[in-house]
Length: 78
Image 1: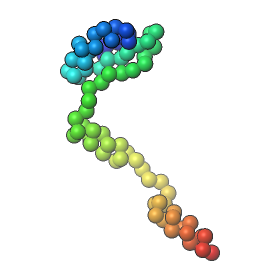
Image 2: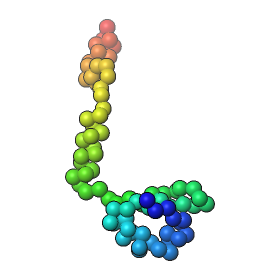
Image 3: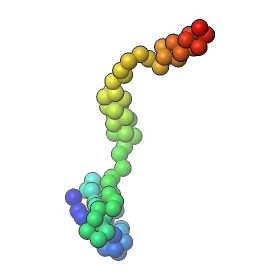
Image 4: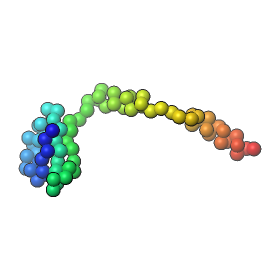
């Protein structure tokens, strides 16, 4: 992973983008503090896999939303 100042990145933007396109990650620094990260784009398949992994990692706790709404409406009528 390459770390480079924002000023130097502005001067060498084309070569940095070529490196990122080859899969490298670049961290941009301003006053020795990380302010941005250049990373290659994910393909559609990679994005969808990431979204699926995220959804699969979610665990629903308690009752479903529909059950909550039905219970709330029932309580309002009483």
